[in-house]
Image 1: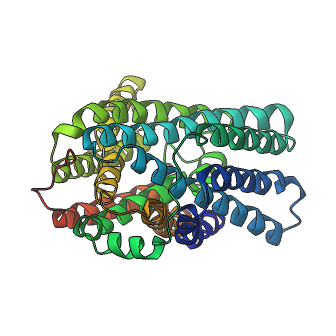
Image 2: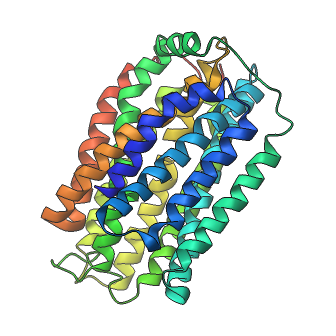
Length: 363
């Protein structure tokens, strides 16, 4: 529920703050978003019960919504009329997100192991550093003030590419909520309740979970880097479908790992290698979808409002995934998360057929 609250806050604020980014300078809105996220993290040690935890997660969601739509709008503006460059830039955006997740997981877990609750203050300080970096990076971006923000939003919502990609993107974002919400962390750290190999894997070494996240993001990041080269040459539906088929394969490979308790180390290592290759392939979905969304903005002036759709789809899907993870994780532990992933990937593969096979990422 706490994961769903954070994503829900982002969902509720994405479009309003996306509209605001078309009326206010990005160098104002994005640093404020980073500071709001830092405030939400910094207050965690002082949260008195459930209300304080909820307030912290709401601030975190608001902070993400204050950064992401303006940032994506800025990137769409800077890559206008250059679709090949746009595909690469959107891949690098995804890569920066993954790098932050991986490095943040290591910093957080090691800081918690060393300092305990003061580690939250350290993370809040890092958010303040991010606010400064966002301010510096956006100073030289041309202002794009517009009074047609709502009109631009309506225009992009009517764009066929956006309507066709939305259902499958929503399903993939639900998978993000399944795995990046708090449920997986709880299952890995709590005492094991089943015979599954991954259930309670780090119950006696919680600091290792950061290294697990880093390893995953490195593999995923390698895939995104490769896709940044391949995407400009591929039809989007082929890229999206290939990623989803790989997601199905990775889910089955993880299921085999989760039931490898009586297998030897060599078998588990082989399964991990297969999973890594499939994760590299599945990493192409979000860059391809982002390229399609950014491509629909060629004639739209209110890019911040339009790119708020990215956060809306992410927030709504992640809320669904977080709640689903809580239910399935309580019933079947890691197998429950894998079942949810399988269902969402199948639904996304079915709906990705709506994307026109003739539309190209490169324009």
